[in-house]
Length: 205
Image 1: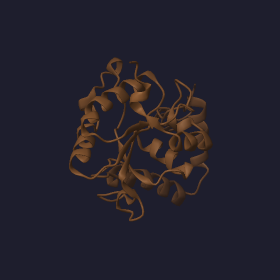
Image 2: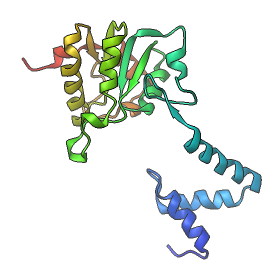
Image 3: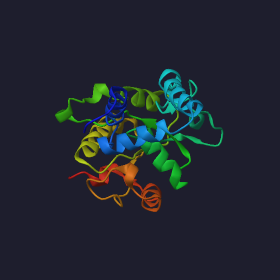
C-alpha cells in the first residue's frame, strides 16, 4: 500500500496491529479520525492514554476495574460463596450478559498452554486456591472455553481444588468443543451456567 504521507503510514501501521484489523480497515479508521474535529480526536487519544495509565485489576478476582476492588466483588447482593472461574474479562462480560449468574468471579488471566509457553505459574491460580482455602466457598464453577487448553486448565484446577471437599462444577457442554466462551450466544451460555454439572462426572474412570 502506497501512502502519500509518512504520518498517515505510521498511523495505519499502528492501527493494523490491533486484533482483526487489516491495513485497509486501519486506513479507513485513520481517515475517519482525520475527518473529525481536533477536540474529538484529542478526546479519543486521551481516553486510550488514561485507560492504559489508570486501569487496575481487582485485588480479589483480578477482573479489570477502576478501583482496587471491582464493583462485582464489593456488591452486597452477590453470592460471595459462589465463585465462577473464567479465562479473562471478556468471559466475565459474557456470563454477566446472560443474567443467570449472581455469584462472584475469579479471572485466571489466560489458559494453560505448553505450546505457547504458558504454565500454571503464569496464571492467577495460586490466588484462587488461597481464596478457597481462606474464605467460605460453597461451590467453584469452572467456566472455561471448550478447547484443548481449556480442558487442560480444567483438569489442573480440579486437581488443585478437589481436596477442599467443595462442589467443583463445570458449565454444561451446550458450548461446542473448540468453541470460545466469549462467542457463545447468551441463551446457550446462560443455560450452560444454570445446568452446570460436577466436573468429576466428565473424567474418564
